[in-house]
Each structure stands twice: as structure tokens, then as C-alpha cells.
Image (cartoon, rainbow, N blue to C red):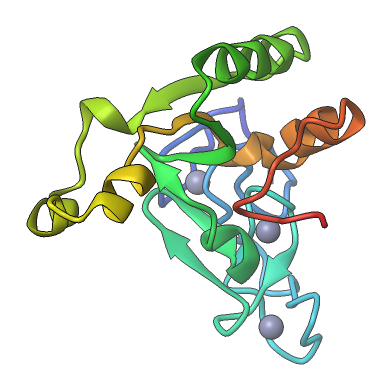
Length: 167
Ligand SMILES: [Zn+2]
Ligand SMILES: [Zn+2]
Ligand SMILES: [Zn+2]
């Protein structure tokens, strides 16, 4: 196989480097030799774009544009990005976003207040639900940056729960 670098992924149509076993953008495997990390007898259905683990059909799935392992597929996601931090404190959320940006990542602060959830409406008269609907400022990163974002936040001790609660 020789090529002038015109290879593109058949699924996401992003450029693909020659010789790679899977698409870095969407996790589509290019080689039948790629096996599930948990089940070595099963061919990989995809590679999680967050943790780069090859997964069989039971261990992961295509979520929107990319393949994710079961664990990363369970992350809250908005507009194709994953929530790594949330706070009702706007400044805290913005600080966290800044920290991630300085680490070379691409965070985005998302406030649910601007996008009310339709399922909340019918319960709005209950005060305890009111409390729970204080808009959380969510710090989102692209799925491929989850691990790095969690490492950065973990080092600074500002990783809060939701996805992975640490006691
Ligand atoms: Zn792809
Ligand atoms: Zn994963
Ligand atoms: Zn598996």
C-alpha cells in the first residue's frame, strides 16, 4: 500500500494516516486483527475515542459520531462533547475551563439554563425539583480529551463527581 496521503476514513471521512489500525477521529477499526481488550476472541467493533481501548460489540458502541466504550458512552454529553466538570458556581466552572485550556485542551462551558430540559416542565411546582434545577455550568471537552482533562483536574484536586465520583 502506498499512497500520497489521500486516505480518508470510510465512516467519518476524516484524513487517516497510513498504517494505523483504526480511525483516531471516530474509532472505526481498519484491521480485522484488532481484538476486544476484554474479550480477545472477539473482533473489535471499534476503538473508544476517549481511552483508545478496542472494544467488541458488547463492550462499546457508536455514539453519534464516534465509537465509545461502555464506560465513556455513559458520560453526560452535550453537542457531541463530554461533561468532565459541573458546578452551579459560574466562576468555578470558568476557572476550570481556563485550567483545561492552559493544558492545551478545548473546553467549552455549557449552561443548561439556556437549554431547559423539556422533561422538567411538568414538575416545576415542586420546590425540591426547583432546587435541583439550579442551572449547572457544565465544562465539556471533546470525547478524545476526556482522559487528559480528568488527569489535569485530578492533579489539581478539582475533579468533581457525576461521571466518576471519588469519595
Ligand atoms: Zn473515522
Ligand atoms: Zn473508553
Ligand atoms: Zn468485549
